[in-house]
Length: 191
Image 1 (cartoon, rainbow, N blue to C red):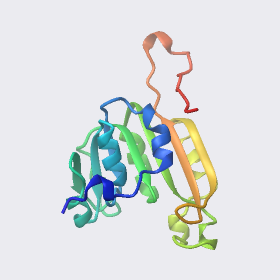
Image 2 (cartoon, rainbow, N blue to C red; image 1 turned 180 degrees about the horizontal axis):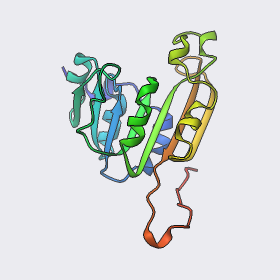
Image 3 (cartoon, rainbow, N blue to C red; image 1 turned 90 degrees about the vertical axis):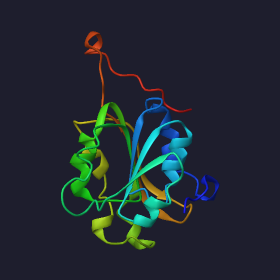
């Protein structure tokens, strides 16, 4: 059963803040997409979205306009080796550290990584509480250092939809013109 877009929770404010950096009409990977709230919003913005999750029911229920693929991201080899590169990789509320090299490799030149999940400290306010599921301080910065250009980063608490410790990053795989090798890239920041 496909859920109408209007019945899904709204997309993350972190994603909507940085989506303007994604190449118009570009390919987007929504990893561990669940019910597809981000995939649906991205598709409505005109992106070609691939939603991946291990839950067959979630994949079957992805909104119209979103391509789905069922895959267990934590077992076996990288299941998207045949998918090519993406103009954006979006991950929210999911952490499996062995995937990081694959996620970075999946970004095309100019591609945008939008990652947001729970961080150390969350064990004091609820679940997830296991260290395997919580980012260490500065961990997203460490993962992207030397590979991507960070354009936005936060590490702190949020109160909605419930109190949680989170870490967020928006980072770009730089694509430079041969004529502008030494010029810093320009990213239009919101606000």
